[in-house]
Image (cartoon, rainbow, N blue to C red; front, side, top):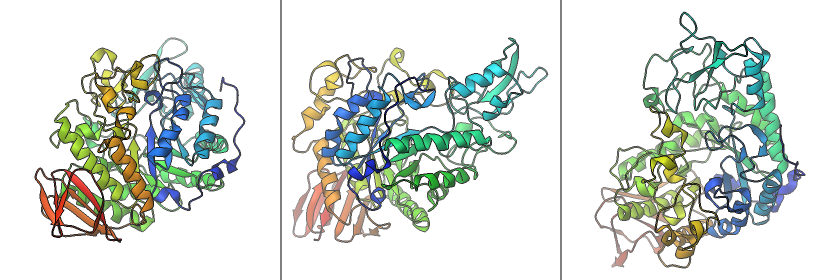
Length: 560
């Protein structure tokens, strides 16, 4: 299906050019790039792979270990590339396969690894298989690769079951058959342009094993699996028996999510990955009811990591944080997998804005809140996250302290969920606004031709240029934190923390010679000075063996 010239695949030994560190992924810091909003090389207002490639030295100097790229595959862009029309081609808006090959090679030469998104739960409705299924009509073998069903009601006018789309409305769309009559319905747990694959059909598994090998042969170091908890549906596609099903997500095992059959797929995939050198990895985006069920995805013969959404949704509250940290470490320890920690991504309001607002508003909000408070808490939360055992994820722009853009005019919004009444709030555009590189210029250095979402006035003062070399800037805090983390053996490694006695509202733990103290309260607190200060997210004072830690501040100490 690819319409682009094929790039000569990089040999599987390409990964050897990155630093060979055994089990690198267990304590890695992985940086998420949302390609359309990172850097634009050709001035069309849309970020691209060449733009990412030119900014790789920035990511190396920031101190991250790997770069995760959100989808850049050929796509009609009904859901920002998560509707894939060709898994072996690059969408022209992002470049070509040759650009992807150059990016991978340059990253490896700089000591960075590349993780790409994989979207196996659904395809685009422009995927060749789905177009064939529509053209061939009911009963065709092509329709067996998706979930086509006759409707209910006297004339089949009702959906086959009561499942609801994550984006709002029914999870079913009725097709017009080749003869022009209303016909069968197909399942789409997301947008109608994203029909779900039927993973009971052997051709689907064969296709994705081939896709894995294609990109592994190109030299990628791993895959982030989109909707990793999807793919397998309960036998018979039973009714759920309730409305407002979105409120149940994350609380119950659903007939279309977190079914046990997904684990058989991942065991097959792991066998493929282990054939390749260089410690390639799988990362699961798995929304599950509990962190214990998340641990099922990272058993030794399945995936390597799974996003910790329970941590992402935790409020800036000491008791809540301790509870989630303990539950996470306790769940991962029996399966031998590292914990992961994340504060922001391309689907949620940036944590500098979430923490600027009262707790309880969720992870998608449209309120600016107290900007100063939000940034102070975000910086403190970052140091706490980077002190925990396991792997950490950083979303592009959070190192600049970027807030969500909460006042985008409705007419510029592009999040498909925004246009589907019920369902998600549709405010994801706010965290996807292109990031600023320079104080001035077209789109603040993002590119020469503006940006696909408008950037706020004053964005330049948050830019990489404005913050580089500026003492106390959020960018320099991240750079220093990542350098200290890499140089300190007790950071990242291991699977446990030793909790220390601390005042109410304070998180304090020891890891070897390292101590982390995070004050989540709105007042200064006095705590013992635990040695030499390595780093702090705010100004602290020490006297007579005691330290005064300001409100919403995290401190790192070492006894070494």
